[in-house]
Length: 451
Image (cartoon, rainbow, N blue to C red; front, side):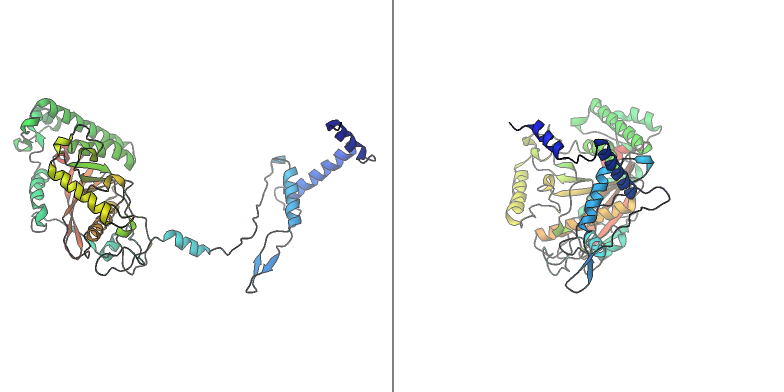
């Protein structure tokens, strides 16, 4: 019966009897050493083996294009690699992996780089904002390009008496905020007047206000003070510890917004770091040739909340906190989004981020580290311009045909919270910069929670 032993015996019988096993092994060892010497150059010398010249074939136009290496040379290289001594004599091995020729022409380096840096382009709008066609490239983060947008964004600074500069829809808000920010009026609850005075060292009676009856007990005021002190400690730790922007969002900005909005049933904050602007709503520079950037995102938004299930952080709010008018508006928004928008644009805002699909954005917030104020301001400007474009498309009107509501914007740079007003002037958007609202490095956090 044929077995492995018979196969071995047959092989031995057919072997070259003129050579002993020792001679065979010696010959093989010399072949191995010869192959190693051909592949592994010693320091200061070149390899002994000279590679054969590359063969070329002719393209359709007669030009020569390189082909792969000689098959015999590849076979020899493979045999040498398989029998080489690893790390012999502490010598380095230069192994070149050669690929077969491409089956179709590859794009040039310049073309590939240009394609990787280019985004969707947009055409010059006429009439209502266009969803299709060739688009010009989106703006960079340089502020000088904002003035060239299809609806330009420009920056201004509010005067001491800002009422003549601001539209009517924010004058009441301005009248409430101005004395708090500029004079520190009515920022501390009077239930903790003693504790605040011990912390600050000196206060004025006008800095305290009387809580509404539902929250008049001192226990609630002390809990709020403890929360503010914890936020102040977290902000100080993030600054001295060199924490990232994400850490600031987690430990400082999110808790502060949650505390400030805890009394408001219809307003909620939402983390928006993954809420990307949809391409149809991205503001463009007509007939421009600037480097494109991906649609920028911001950090937080304050949204209109019309149902108890619209925000995960309000588990203690029940459906009876909302009125029939809230339900009517909520149903109208969903009907507008789901039944009247093109495929891929089923969202109320300029982003398709699911938590923001049906919740109108009221305030947009960008956070920055290391004093990067200018970049944050430009990001807010692009985000706001995209919102204006979305509202114009949603109402099927030209971008300059209507004046939209003024949008408050917040720019947070480390400890400092800055307020801006994005005012629609018809042909452009003017973003007015206001003084700092507050700092998270001291008890002025109270100013932020009040405003």
